[in-house]
Image (cartoon, rainbow, N blue to C red; front, top):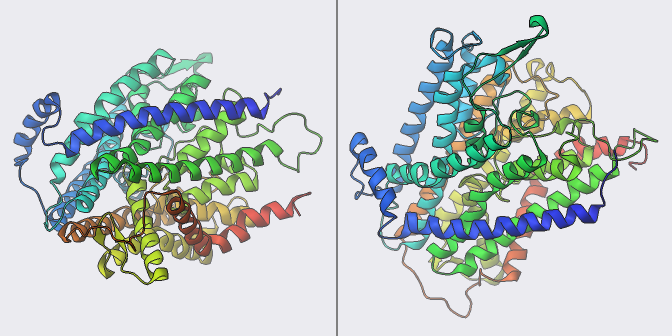
Length: 562
């Protein structure tokens, strides 16, 4: 195919980033008013009051971090149980025009855990395995609730950093309700209407039979799920082809809209943070770190794919195998970077078909904790954990007790930050090792060698970091991967959340100390550079052997790769 100049793609990405930054800044201010002003918007107060009465919640009563964590875990457990039963029994429930059968218990468990943890890992084909009722009342509902849960945790963490000498960090039910009613529902409604206007389908029609019944075209309520799938950084998809399917993502314009949606709220959170702590520069620094990591990853992926696969000698143009011609290289690279820089996992191309160095980028972004820009809340609170570690290391280097936002960082806060950062990494290394050591793990490898190693590591990285994307060359619909994957998704989601809430509680109880001559400024460019280095060094020390044995080794095997 004839391909436009890279400079044109670069100009398009710059315009996209500018639009994203402007929208994120405005949304960040709105989020600040929603969560940190004494009086949130009147329409939100009107809408949330009946919800509190239904739940029996006193919106004026706040919890300690333990109470907050208890409510969150209870709520998530109930959601997982409901979705599990729904998937098991969908064959006898209404809104099942395709007559799909119920899920097997292990697949139902994996799917329920997946959507409740905001992972959206799919070991099934949506259009042939899930009924309309399961898609709407189960999967789409959890897309809202799991995203709202992540935002609630971040809000609680920010309260902990702002407050002093208290053991209260907020009410989970209030934070959850405001996330759904005040953020996700209105934005998803507008996004769904926009997607419908561009050709994304939204109906409850029976599947269409063509060619005398030889071909079946799936129908369904796609736009409503697609909107929150991206906006909530959920991932998954109504169709097995995900956002490469023309009914989910029909045009280059909808492709950009979907990338914009999945980055919007994560990009807005640093701006909310700066407003909430009373120093916008703190938010600007964190946004700059996110943006630098994101653009750096995009450039590496774009360059690797532009160079093409050296095995295809003599081919003209950009290699498009595994990519949608509708979106081109820039649209593919931008989507692949955005979906793994966040914890989204939606895909518009086959990551398994990327060049070795191109495939290294999404893998590395996931393994770094998806801090650029991260999922709704999850990436930001992981980034704050990295900030705590960076400040702590800097404090040791200059011989001072580390401080952040006027709060002393003690041993407990440091321990919780380390747990939040390293939990997923430990899971990936341990579970990948187990998968490589047992036949149940290796039998699913369809492409042995370095690429097969990458597929296994990518699968566990995606599950443990609650991303949900896959290299797709690995058969993960087996008992081993559904059960072990369920463990990875559960631990990878809730252990860091509990650690972050504990960190928030400890920070809220501390006094604020005035800055002194030796206080490390965390709103400056040098600190931003230092934070980027800490993130990259932690990732390099933890995962470089995996990178070397997987994508880098595969690259060196290719002609011209050495």
